[in-house]
Length: 228
Image (cartoon, rainbow, N blue to C red; front, side):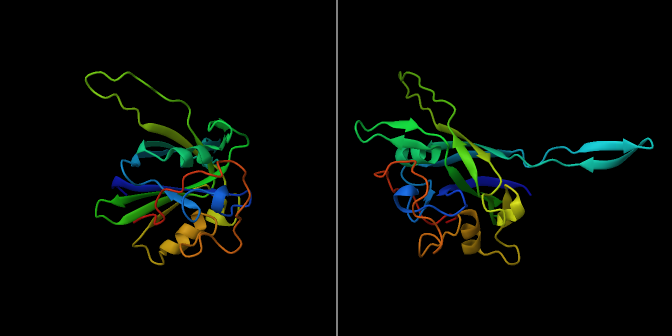
């Protein structure tokens, strides 16, 4: 399954039950934020920890059994740029209306994420994570001189077991190919993003409150059509 490129990355905030947060409690438009727009977008998304080597057990001088532990996916992300307010909400920072600053708050919010890329034959492919945390471990700054010194946004996504254990069969990761029999993009989005619907901005049972992280005046920029 060789691939090329990265089409887009989409985020959403979900509550403790895995339901999509919308309105001021959520991000983007209708609860999801596709990182796209003028000078914005993903440059890399490197997924690791999908599976670990099994532990072999021996008996009678032979390898008799292999035990396999839980998957622990992580995604190293880099963006050419990403909306500032949306990023702070995804990290779990809260907005101080008194002076306009943002500060970290625990516990961190539940973040769902969908990666969109293509096969060598240009078939759309997706990797979904229904629950996790988005972390920015540091920032880098260097002086401009006769050339501009840029520092792209670098983030780490740590995948967790879905809050709703009926999602992904309780696994932290799921992959789709658009040509697979039964593929349904709308159902995929609803599964990853806790009941999301392009027409209603979330299921009728989805939460519109939940997490108090993030600004109530945060930007609502960002696309609403993942996998365009």
